[in-house]
Image (cartoon, rainbow, N blue to C red; front, side, top):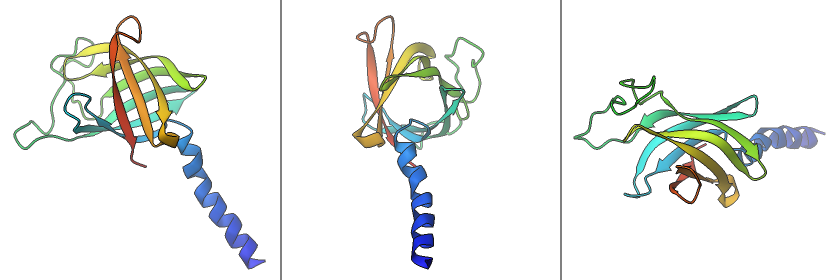
Length: 146
């Protein structure tokens, strides 16, 4: 009987990890599509079926400002700290993808349409930002951290 109780407790403790891999909710390291280097940790959350992502940490070179502001942003985020900033918003599940959202690139201050989908069994996230149609854009791979 103790074995069954222990097994049930272990199964309950492990099952959230499997559920997380079926959803983009969690902490992600984004990898720059140009340099191939990690740029930030982004926490994706879900509220009422809509995803949003905030920057939790930046990976900066020693000669770079450790707490930059979005000086190129054109909206309410202008001159706000990039750490803690919402850069991903409005994405809703549509089949295997999340669509209809926007993503901010703090390096140029531009806001792009966005879509994303999980790959590699939920360990990676393909994030695409684009203007007009998805073919006119660029993609990044984000790696799950938790």
